[in-house]
Length: 86
Image (cartoon, rainbow, N blue to C red; front, side, top):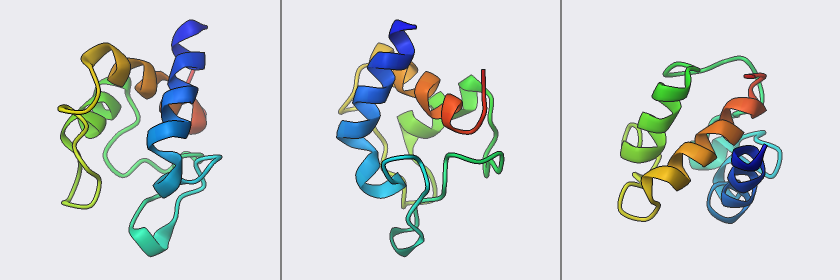
């Protein structure tokens, strides 16, 4: 789907440096793995959008001023797929 493909490109550009190329996470920077079924804050699309938009725990940055709403939603589709979401 286009949202998945666009989300993957957005992920590579903005998220992979902390969460890893395959979503494996980098504990040394406090970035959890995204490619398993362990979701710290919830795995539904809305929660993923919220996390990307507003950040988490002062470690995950808020992206609301850097990415548009539609871009965040596309990114959420891709992130959701990393953890086995459909």
